[in-house]
Image (cartoon, rainbow, N blue to C red; front, top):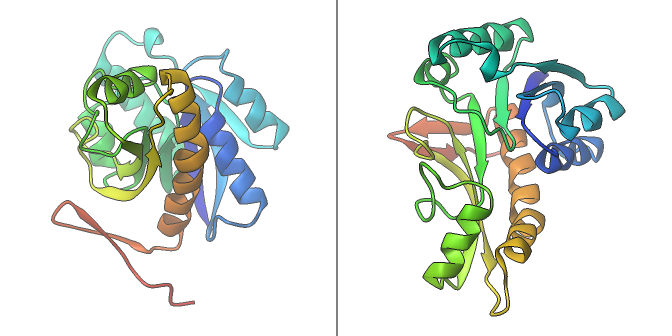
Length: 211
C-alpha cells in the first residue's frame, strides 16, 4: 500500500475529490496518509482532519532561501514516507532539487490541455481567462509528472471540456473541475499506486492491469 501525500494551499477541492474517490474504493494500492499545507489557514486542512488524515504545515516565508525551503520539504516528505506526492492546488514553487529527489513521483493537476495555456503565470482563473480570450472551443485538464520545467513534465492523463458561448472564467473553471480535474486526478493516482505508469522519453505509457 503506497503512501499518498497531498500538498495543498487553499480550499482543497481536488483533495476532496481524492478523498471521495478513496472512500468509494477507486484508488487501488494506495492511501492518503498525510496532507501538507503551505499555510495554516487552508480549509484543506479541515477536510483532512474530518477524514482522519494526518496534517503538516510548511510555510515558505519561514525560510530565508528557496534552497532552505526545498531541503526542509524534502526532509518532511521523507519523514512522512511519501511514495507519491500530489500537488493539488499547491501555490508554492518547488525547486529542481525536490523534483529530482522524487523523480516521476510528484504529479500535478493543471486546468488546461497542456501544452496550451500553461507555464509560468498560468494558474487559477488566469488559465481560463486566456482560454476564453483565445476563443478555443475545447479546454480541459491535464495530470502530469512534475519536473524542473513549469508544467513541462510527462503527461499522464488529459480530459477535454467544451467551452460554451456564454462562459465566464468562473463558470469555465467550475466545469473544468467537475468534468475533468476531479475525474482524472484520482484515476492518475490509482494508476501510479498500481505501478501502471512507465515513463520513456518524456512520455507516459499506461500498462495493462495484470490483476
